[in-house]
Length: 370
Image (cartoon, rainbow, N blue to C red; front, side, top):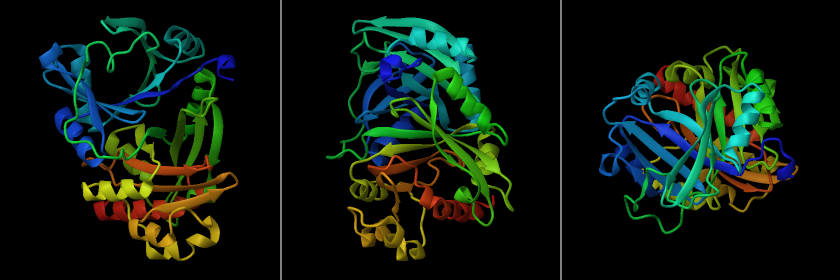
């Protein structure tokens, strides 16, 4: 099927964060998320303006970049981004078999080109890169690394872990990346992914699916033909009080990446280890678990364990999933993470939306933002 796609993709290449202090962010994600540093770029190897740490866990790759001393338009832009938005995702990089063809197709179909295709070379080979704009100040870098076997990109050197890695990794892939956009813009961005990348709709959540007594939102999920790259898109909807999307848009200063879902093979072990390392997860009331077995059925994890760890479960026609959400991982109530363990289901936890949003609202109320 991939060879017939107008815009074939291989998967997520990297989630790139702009942060105030990349060294400290890299240490946090190494200890709390069990990731392993694999590459580095900074003053010690010729990058005078920025420092970047590349962390990996299985096929998931995060890059944390901070500005040391802005001396160019790029450095100043990055520094201004962090000042305006706080720590956040600036790039959802997608690996493609042909960056030149992907860029040409995207621009021809209405994408705003940010960087025309160019090559980076070193002793490990050649990488072809290009970039297009998406919602807010987020970009998609299109990466063709088929002719490259270095640690990340030319300009980066291999680097060992910052801390002793866990015996078993906490997650092995990026499952999906969720974007929040302004009221009335969701369908516009859904259409963007249809036109520009040939993505199709996977799911749609509107109305009572995705509302509580106080707040509501609407969401549609777009994905490539292989379902390796999945982008849910949310917009706020009318409610009695400020929704989680409204809160995000206010504190992030506009549209951006709300959360990143990480696929794990053992959510119980991962959540236990991450809690011990200081990761805070959203709480779920006991009453949720009293009737969980009635509609989610039997899962590989006993309900008592799900209750203990506050893990959610959901079932659809294809199987079930287990999931849990962290609280925001920085001072601003913006970016957070999801851990997800799938057993057949390709859904997004529709049955949990009410419980999840009520948990988020409790945190909003504590922050004085509901």
